[in-house]
Image (cartoon, rainbow, N blue to C red; front, side):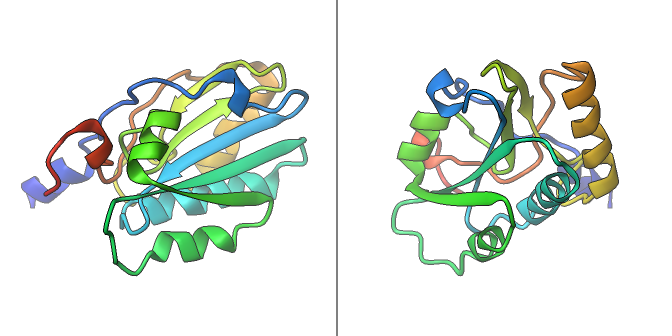
Length: 170
């Protein structure tokens, strides 16, 4: 039991870099989440993102980037879920290209840019692996939008995006 709790609360690796300013849209909030197609931990992150998008009336662009490992032939449950999230767009890239472009190394990593195209947040939306908490995510985003930086970085709890970083899959 202790091993399971330790795993649930152990964050993934931080980003290699953050996406460039070209990824942000001027005049509106830009949210970019990088996900593995089947990481079971990421469903909670996607649900929390969906709750934020549903609750906000701010001008916003949300992009969900699926980082698909080479020769991956799994069911891609997260992609099916992501396609149904209103106010978002899904971009499917091979994992190497996604990690190089966005820098995320853990599924569920979120980058938030304000309307002035400043990166104001880099991290996860959950307090542990698979821990869905939509209300906390909504309150967090509203505070971020109203007060500026609430927390500029936070850990991300999800599966590793390994092939692009040279790490061994396993």
